[in-house]
Length: 227
Length: 110
View 1 (cartoon, rainbow over the protein chains, first blue to last red):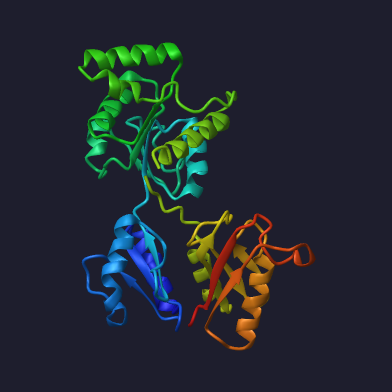
View 2: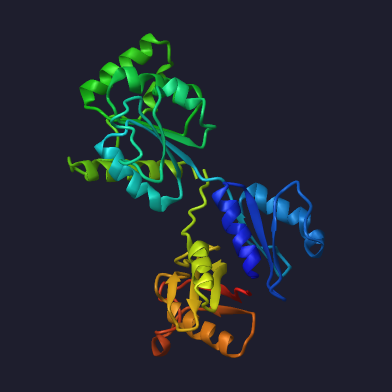
């Protein structure tokens, strides 16, 4: 692989562009391909198969050839509402998992760059903040303020936009009250039931890093749930 | 759902190249049976035999380093190696888990 190609791969990954690396295992020639863009002439006859691999997100050697393809897809987005103590640990656990992380908190003292270096912190109310993030069903919401006026609008946004994971911090009682408010706001029972609350898998710990670990574990298990 | 769990080996490869090292990139290109790491798993090796990342659960990394050093010595750009189930007499090279993998080695050309 040429150094220029390696450089281009790293740049594309940073920009969250989806692409495929194609390698001819016979002669070592490789290139980057983005679907719907022109393909390098030496790989043109395999374009149909390469597109198929991209659509299925399948990595490997194309049958009966010496062509190896590897797909890079957009990372899953994780939106944390509440720039609290648990969020600081959560951010460090999640950093190794290739998620794209955003933190929303309208409270200036919490949402400071100093507390969250290298993370996109949006110091606004959820409704406004969501207009700055492109979300889809590959987005997760982790609500950590347990303050209805901050968490609830975020939960409602996540439910309306079919996020694959929605978790909310708080005791069983807090969660029961939260569900009641969502019923009153006319959200259907099945989408309320999908909210993970109290958040996290049962590990037993109560410290901020332990709770952050249990949330991280639940988040990853949800990624692979329907695979 | 799919997520590309990128282990940042390519970023590290670039750092090594920038530090004037000769870098071999090893990628799992085929797997059969219960192989420990999926297709696309990577490790990098430099001319001193330092390595980072993995192509198995520790079973064949030593052999990948050795093959990478050979590649550098012979001044070749790429090579494909297959690792099969290990037997007791050669337990250093081979996959104890019973899987089989093919690894592609390629030099980062400056």
